[in-house]
Image (cartoon, rainbow, N blue to C red; front, side, top):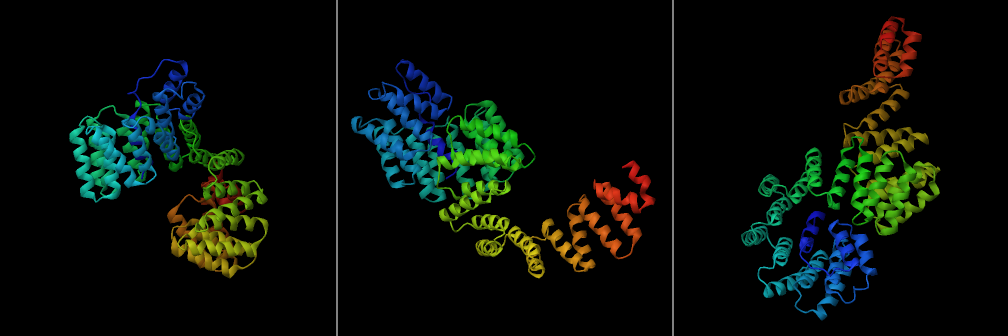
Length: 481
């Protein structure tokens, strides 16, 4: 179930209850309206009226649901229902909690109980649609959502969920059209922009995703889920806006402090070459959730980069303990062992990683690097060959194989690999430089200077020095570069 649609069912309560006017009531309601749920929970738990005020008890149930703590919301709602057996908000909350815990039969029981009390109960009708979508066929799900639209034509959620049903079924053109129709029908509805942004994100259409999520934030700057989505989009865009991604994740954290958000902030710092900050946030994520293997692997990578291999190996071992079926966990430990000089153990972990993910060219490249370091050139060459078979456009594999071929005097093979790289990236100064060196070794000074000039043109300072020293013909070009 997608994150955004797991939250739709919770739109139940925001503005429809009446509260008493004690200061803690008003503060809690204000925090909920700002979607600062962690802060609201603290106010509610300290409020002396909580034991006696049913509206505050229901508000606390809502807060726990927004925090994705459905086990607690279920217990609280069931306790509330004992004293208030026909309270429709509590009945719906129990059903919604069961739904998010994927106990669909129990969820249906409570939603139907509510609909017996009130056939037009908005949220139980909506949540029953979600149940039918999750357990029934596509035609049954569509029948249910269209019935909901007929009953509640002025609620965008029904039209958005129809689009999601098609998206979930892989009928993407129809899904996109329905999302856009909903956005047009409900002008100014932040939900419509948010859902369309998430649709585009999952289709890897990141520019459109960012455009729509920004509009959703402009329309409603209190929804932490939109800031979270924006952070994920900026992280995946990989265009140098990691600082902006960090700000967006931090803003999302104001409503509900999430381990996943903290880990994403750590990732942003890691890829900004700020490993110490990354480790801090990885640690905070682990403190909130010690069950995610990749939290430990991510922190291990940061520790290894800082040379703290003893700490890295502890996290690597923990990640494998949590999930031994994930290739990356062994791959990361292999790199840590490689960094400590434990080459045989590293090789074993590389083999395990490959057995779990045999089509990942990058693992073979890292194993090739290990073999090169310990002088096993033939094994390294075979690893590069396999990597290139898996990914013919892998510059790292082509470059590594070209170096080995050069060292073994296979100049034709090396040049072939370098020329392939230049077809992929014609601006790679190192490739031009290495080609020049090959031509020098072959006794071809004209080609040497020709290729060295190209390396200089693309920014190689070493190439400029070589031109000045060996290629007087290119002195003028050097002065103009």
